[in-house]
Structure formats: C-alpha cells, structure tokens
Length: 346
Ligand code: ZN
Image (cartoon, rainbow, N blue to C red; front, side, top):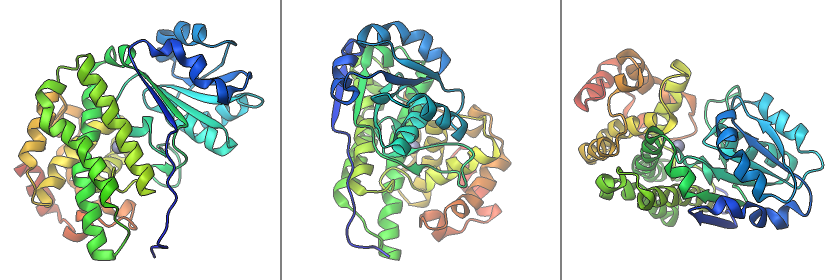
C-alpha cells in the first residue's frame, strides 16, 4: 500500500574532473573532523591509487582490503572504522558497496571514489552484496559525497566502461516497468525521477558512437549519467527508475552463473529482450550496446542458452513484490526461447 509520502536522500556534493583525487583531503575535511579516515579498497585499485590517496590526506588512512562484496567484508570495515571520521570506498563495485553498507550500519558518513564507471552504485542509495537473504540490492544511504577523477576512470579497462553503458540503457525498460506497475497495481510513480533516469539511458542511446570512444569527454558524460541515475533513485525513494525486469533477469543469472559477466553487461543484454516485450525499439538498444563495445549475445559473457531461458522464465520469482513486464507475460520455456532467439541474445 502506497503511504502517499516518501523520503528523498541525495548526495550533498560531487567533485568531478581530471586530477581531483589530489583534493580528497579537502573534500572529506568536514566529515573527517581531524580524525583518520577508513579506506575500503580492492588490492588492484589500492596499488594504483594508494600514493595519490595518501598524499591527498592529512593523516595516513586505515586501509581495509575488500576481497568480496559480502557481510564478512562489511564487518571488517566496520571493525576498522571505530574512532574514525568517515568511510571512503575507493574502487569499482565491491569496495563502494561494502563501504556504503558499513557506513550505513555505523551511521557514519560515506564517500564514494569510483575508479571505474561500470554501474550506478557509485551514487545510489543501494548496496549489492552476496550472501544476503535476497539476490538483489539492499537499501542503505547514498554517499554524502562522490569524488570522480576522470583521469583515473578513463584509464579503467574499456570493458568496465562499456558495462556502465549497459547499466545506463537498462533505465529504458526499468521506467517502462515502473509505468506498467503504476497502471496495474497503483504503486507510486514519479514522472520527474523517471524522466531523469531516461535522460541517462538516452545519453547512451543517442550518442553511442561518440560515447564508445571513451575519451575524456565521453567518460565524463558516462560518469555524470551514472551519478544522475543514482540521484533519480534517491528522488524516487526506491530503485524503481533504475531497476526493472532487466535487472531481475541479471540477478537471476547471478544465481545461475555467479562468475559470468559484469552487472551492466547482463543488464544490457536483459534490456534488449525486455524492450521487445514492451514493444519498444529493441534494435536501437542492441545497436547502441554494440557501438560502445558491450556484449549483446549471451555467449559473449560465457552464459549458455538454457541459462538465459531459465532466467527469463523465473526472474520475476526472486522479487514477487516488484511488478514488471515479466509478471505480466509469464513466459513459458517456448516463448522465452523465442524471445531470446528473435533478439539475437542466443
Ligand atoms: Zn544496475
């Protein structure tokens, strides 16, 4: 039942540009309040930016190496954070998710310092963790601040940047699912946050060729679009504008093949098929993904035909409270196979 009100939580500041990592100390100053900061980071990322992070901070930070996005690592960050001023997640996915949830549980300020742009978790109020009772994101709080150094992000592997584009196009079908749910179940629908999320999808759909070069300007646009979708979720007070049937498909694939493909890659492939179910231009989605170098066929991420079909059939069961086109269509094995084949996914 829609209570008729909701809370909007948003990041308060974003610093974006080339070389801004050197301003990290200044950026955190008010929240750190003279105390040490805890930096959650993966080992690869730490070796790449450790020097830059340490020279930007007035006190040597406490580094916690995040090895997996799970509660064990959240607990390790929480234990290290005692007596510190704030938590900073430096990295692509895991470190930001783990740091965000640790800070949320401790009621501490969290800052996100993305080193790649592979999904919208860099700014959203959600954290994706393994080993919870459900295979999708949990609600936490958005980062207080996001510091995005374009020079660092532009040097990330192209595969990660292309994956970010996959997470962006997925807003197209997420918003369609949200509209559908509003019509069918009467749940709250916010046209402002829906438009904001769509704007981010259109950044890829309208400009995939130039974006796919991944020069400094296009990386900046990609990062701004990802930050903006996290803000759209903050305004909506739910992940609705950012996550629909294509995300359910991706989450189901996570269960079947946990090591195959990146989040944005799976969501992008899901978007092609969900767009067809919604009777919107799925070929345009496919072409945009191809133009940025993101996978459009399941085999490109090592996922077999049967896994795609099973995910299409069962994805809606992992989150029955979320009404999407998959709840309406109730695909059979035959219709799921037809959908995947007709869109070139299998
Ligand atoms: Zn996503």
